[in-house]
Length: 251
Image 1 (tube, one colour):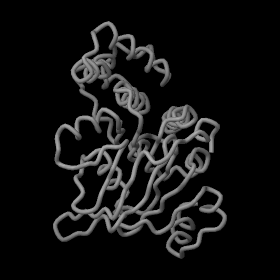
Image 2 (image 1 turned 60 degrees about the vertical axis):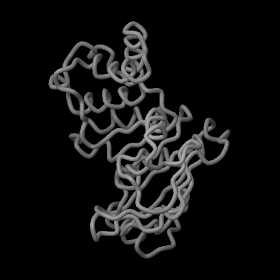
Image 3 (image 1 turned 90 degrees about the vertical axis):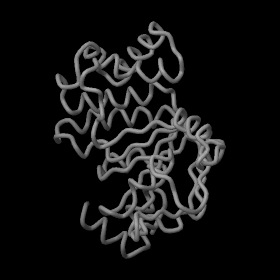
Image 4 (image 1 turned 180 degrees about the vertical axis):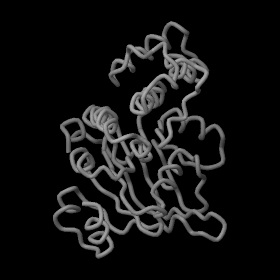
């Protein structure tokens, strides 16, 4: 655990008996776990195991059907006031960049802070430029997304999420749409966030990166958390046969 994470205060995310169905498909099965403030949790598992659905429930992009989810002291339910509060506290970066193609990089980043947090244009621009510096591409501010590489677009997407000044960041396979040579530049940004003390949940198959940054792993299979533990536990002494099989296939 990083020095920043060593001062963690307690659970910032609580999940108790969370279930989710898509029609007859039971995609999340009695998920119970907590995430401490400033913890970095990496979520692994085969395709279709429920990883992405799980993190999407944490900002209610996917409403859960039964159970309880509490994020930063706010219970997730149908109360729209709670929903707005949660989404201002939880940033999310997807596989696809989801940038507005008709807006410059700068305007992609400043849109939400101006609309939601009521920042002035000047303050929003200053925030955006500081975030572009943080992700290493300040010189791209006036370009449009289509003029950038995939890795640069994903770094803009991270800066856009950070512009809402969230306490928690969710990453759903943020490098899966990138060419191999662009992956490291995005992972470096996420690693910097991890060492800064932000709470992160990351779905990824980049195992070297995961081992470096994670405080804890959650291994999903068939909608359940099959195994969890530290990187040392996970890579040197996994207990479940399903975990061992998965690791043998990807390492």
